[in-house]
Length: 349
Image (cartoon, rainbow, N blue to C red; front, side):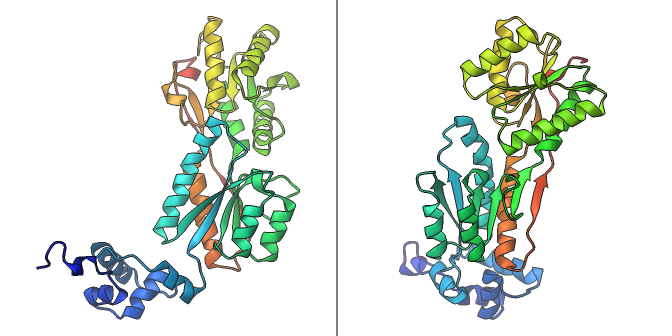
């Protein structure tokens, strides 16, 4: 029996200790840790269980010297976007990225991207070989940065769909065009006939995709959309309130509103209540993203669910696949959206 507090308790567990417990060679344990050879699933499970039981922690520096790897990936966050909603939206993706990274025995290094830095933070990480790969927000990519990564054959994945000028297809995004179609289709099935779409900024790629899906689904259903059906709401309460007022005074046939996110939907809902307009009887409301407010508002909001956890998970798994397989083909990934129906569109309930 070991004495509590004895020196033995604090001695680091080694690969030899794991090998002895499982009954395999130390080289087999090493190959499982480094993922450098095909080992049976049964043996992997035994070794993993022994590592957990003995509280084994691989020596990252030693692994780096042997494998030429830092066992670290980078994640760039857009520090220029201080909007609270955007940060809440992004946190689920970061959580997923971190979980995938830890599961594979890597560390996650998070850095900020700002216009002032002009990509220098990323440049230093790449050229100084401090990371093995990097995940970038679509807002952070530039022609110079992509050229740097490409010239150095450096694995990277972009979160968000880039515009057509972007050379390469290593990106992951939600299928925002599909989301726009689903929102319209749901409203029509609920008995609404004149939906409008609120977007924050028509210039962003994801909003343009939603607009395209919105317009296409209206046409498919025999409706004739006009420019008045798409309203640029802006991001603050005053702007949104002004646009709602204009909508109610000018476009009286409107019977439903699709909001670009929870915060816009919240302000729309508050303005409608001030005007004594009932939801969902007079106007139905549907929002993009189910998180964080949609199900807690009154009435609970129907949502186009965009799974940002899955977005981060796919971005991370794609990056690690690129790190492992240098000859991997470039790929663009669109993640499906779905409707979560609630009372805010329950006109026929």
